[in-house]
Amino acid sequence: MYRRLLIACALLAVLCGSALAQQTPPAKTHLKVGDPAPDFTLRATDGKTYKLSDFKGKKNVVLAIYVLAFTGG
Amino acid sequence: MSVDSVPANREFAKQLGITFPLLSDFKRTVVKDYGVFNEEQGFGNRATFVIDKDGIIRHIDEGNVAIDPTTAVDACNALTHKKASQ
Image (cartoon, rainbow over all chains, first blue to last red; front, side):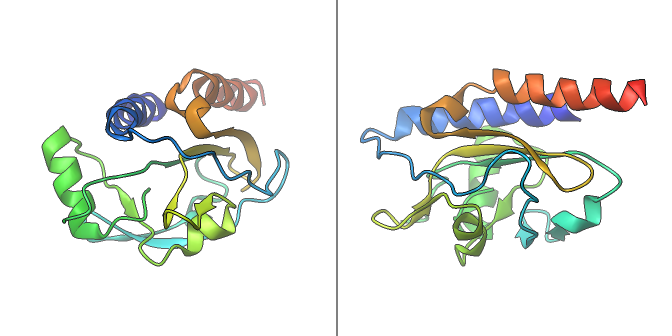
């Protein structure tokens, strides 16, 4: 599961990286290793809604934030 | 996850042949909660967070470092091995 996700993330990252001609300086997150991950509930492309805390006690989660999926314009 | 709309992410997934669901943070709440919102550009900066089963952040990659998933993979492997040894 991880492997599939990570390979896809890598692919996304590379593709987005090439699309992002002007690189902006990264905002430094206030979060640190060891902090509780803020919970979230988000809609996904499969029409379902995913909540981080639903995975608690069940699965490790990789949250990959990517930029510039097509913005429709 | 990106701040793009669900339809935009769908098109993105379609063009890249991605079969797993992509999350949409269209309201920018999650990128703000995770401290990676780029106010000037209006989107979330690239970042990878590895979160363990207890909901604790175990690894963070930010910016261009997050393009290469190697360190995130290592963090995942460490969590898996930890689980296996318990």
